[in-house]
Length: 221
Image (cartoon, rainbow, N blue to C red; front, top):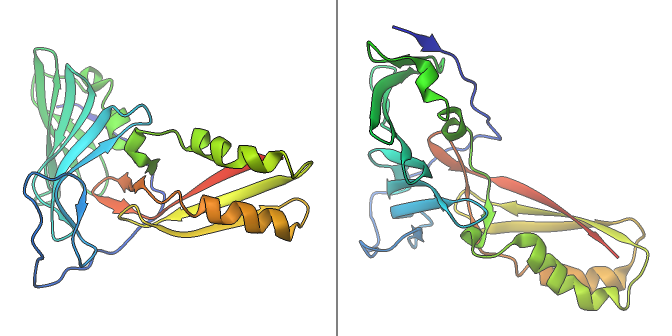
């Protein structure tokens, strides 16, 4: 039996809340939030290029069953909810399939007899958190910012805006703050409303839960 340690990257933590009733949600819909602001059904988390990175199922804002990470068409990692401090996984790469489990909360990795943790060379990529992603990868956030700020750059010169966008655990923007190198009420009044419209985000995900996330953007004028 061979073991390996890993350390997951944690950005912040959150607490799930549940309610007794569940508003109806389409069974074939993806990434849906019900009227009580809870995730329901199938959720797909993507990379910046739009490629699928992780797929899971939610019920009343809590993960239900396994979650599957995809590196490419031939490589996946399926992780199952922990039982008795052991989180079972199945790693598949081409025709190779390796089973094992993670110890919780230590993160020690065990693999089945006759296998080596060295065969899990890409696994560490699945253990890290997924950052919040604007428009689920269908649009690039910096392209959007450049497009909306371009008309303003004809009027406002020699300034810099440091923007912070706060996204909640369900991908909703909760605040947009901006700090200018040189105070300018007119620039602030023209730019901030545009930035507040960037409200379509895939929430950040870390280990077994989504979490709040803050994205910083710099705009030069």
